[in-house]
Length: 107
Image (cartoon, rainbow, N blue to C red; front, side):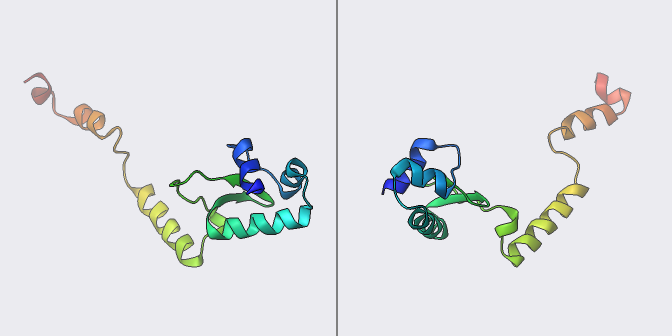
């Protein structure tokens, strides 16, 4: 519980096990084990090497690309490739208006 309270107090900044151990005055190795366990359960974000971050209840679990499963990486790559070929929907209406013939624009 002390570990979760310490990370909640630091939110949104991530912290290392050494930093959390210093805050709660507990042995670093014990804190590291607790942080790893909470991360595996999805209670905490683990954004990078030796960094842990508080996760609010209901918030999606953030998994960096290097921690995705092989199937998830393949799906993400396929999605990026599909998106690269599509025009931006944000400007689609403006592009269509510019490409209309002059008669339609005035009418």
